[in-house]
Length: 253
Image 1: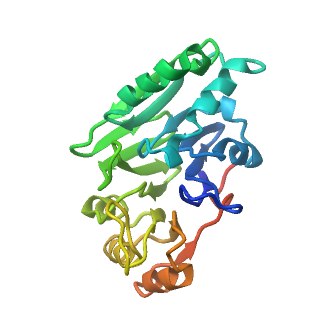
Image 2: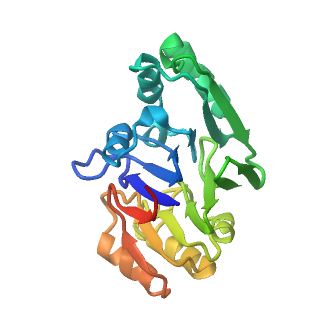
């Protein structure tokens, strides 16, 4: 299993960090995890044509996590060649209604070629497990809005957890217990917390409880001192760093 971070930033435009997105590859299959603005270009830069993705997995449907869904589906329609198979999406309950409203605005232009969009909704009141061929997805509800979930991805004997956007969350600590890599948001400084998001001290508490082998900080808004955040989490003894766009973890094609 190989993970490539396609966007390590936030909703604030940044010349070096795009909005949230991750690419997970297992064998010849690749899944897009979230997908904010600019994700498709960085997916191509990582060597994957977005039109060939096996499917999409969304932590939630705020714009900085899903804004590239419309251009992705449009690209599948126009080709060349147009996509000839369905495009499955896994996301929290409420995503189907969200997508219905997108369809009302864009119509046929977001129908991918000869295939269909197939949405698999996941519960927001407890955990779920889904087998996505050679990738296993586990989810837990996150402390955020817009049908938010924490995501755990397992393949080839390895496990990755993506926090998505969240406030303090015991579910995240449980899901990330002894995981190989935790990709975790750290959106606000301890001095000025944002509801529904984590501060460095919150991330440290999760790291201390979960003991991941490695932790990548992402989604730092401009008010967060990255060096201080890293130092706060590092005091737990967990290996931590701030991730950057196109950072890669694991092995794969």
